[in-house]
Structure formats: C-alpha cells, structure tokens
Length: 278
Image (cartoon, rainbow, N blue to C red):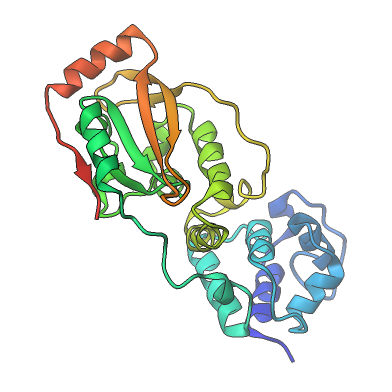
C-alpha cells in the first residue's frame, strides 16, 4: 500500500519529460516521465531506496533525503512545502527533528552597552542562524533600504535566500550565500540548526539545500554591498564570539577603503540609534 508521500514523488516523476532535464529519451516505455533510475541518480540515492519510498515501504526519509528529492525534481517553493507536509503526515523524520521553540533572541544588557560604545560604527549581534538580534544606528543606516530590517525579527540567512533584493544588494551573492549556509553548522545547537534548515528549505529551494551539505568553509573576503544610493561599499568583517552560554557573536563592519569611509560619513548624517530586536 502506498503513502501520500510516495504517491506524490511518483506522480511528480511521471510528469517530468526527460528532455527537460537534458536526459536522452529511451524509446517507447510503458510508463511516462522520468525513469526511476534517473531520479535516483539526480538525488544521490539508490534506486532500491527510491522504490521503497514510492511504494510506501519506507515512511521515514530523512530531511536530507527529502531535500535531495526536492532538488532532483526541481520542485518550486509550494511543492517543497507540500512534500514536507506529506512527510509529516506519513510519519517522516521531519516532524520529530523540530525542537519546541527557536533559540532565544535575548541579548545581555552588557552586550547592548558594548554596542552603544561602538556607535556610530556598523555593528550587530547575531547567532549562526543569521538572526539579527541587536544593531547600532550605523548598521541601520547602511541596511535601511536593503529590505533586511523590514521584518519584525530580521534574519540575514532568510533574507539572502528568499528576498530577491539580496541578489542585487550583495555584489558577491554566491559568496554570502555560501557563508550563511556554512554558518548553520555552527548554530546555537544542533537542534536549533536542524529546526532552522527544515523551516527555510521549502522557501529557499535548491540554492539553499545544495549548500547545506558542504563542509568546507568559504574563503574570507571583503563584503561588497551595492548600496541603493549607487555607491559600492567594501567592508572588512571582525567577528567576536561571545561566551558559549550566549551562543551569539558581535560582528563589526570596518570600511575597507577610503571611498567606503567617506560614503559612510554621508550615510550617518541621517542618524540612527541602537536597536535591540524583541
């Protein structure tokens, strides 16, 4: 007997023409669509395992396998969300990996006081999930028109992978995307990282999921921002780890050239105050 998850994967596979993935046609076939072997190869799993999923004999595929299938089938955001839902109701592992709540967003008063001392520098407190927990007015001046700070609980990783404006704002978007995905391995806890990856994967799609299995740290290079004012800003980054109990870090952006320093002086005329985010 099949399962909703297996039925969905099989139906989606049957709906795909091999030519759309650059695969050769194999002549007349009894079943339409993509061969099971072709899908298994694209997903990096065995044909036998894919068969068990489609036939409902494996009801607990891991989040990594679900992401691999979503990538291999080129699912859009809505289809990825549906795949994740079907995995939950089928009894998949996704439901069991989510902790009761996301990590704390609390920033200690002494850390906030340190940020005040750094004004008008461009600095913020974050965790390795990308949550922007507090920031200086200088940071707000730089990010004001990027869209990052428009949400109640801004998150840099989510912004990079889901907001189209990020691809313009970050001159080296691929580099920044690699950095944010790699940072998830260093999150507040393994449970928090798994929770966040499961939350983001259906929204961010293959650009995110193909990066989260990489284990090599990306190179350290200056951060280049295409600021909405038309100025390219170049920054060196200092990342200062707070005590392990905080599971947070203080990031300071330092102008990498004179042009950025002068542009920052102009931006700061608009002002801005320290902001801790709820």
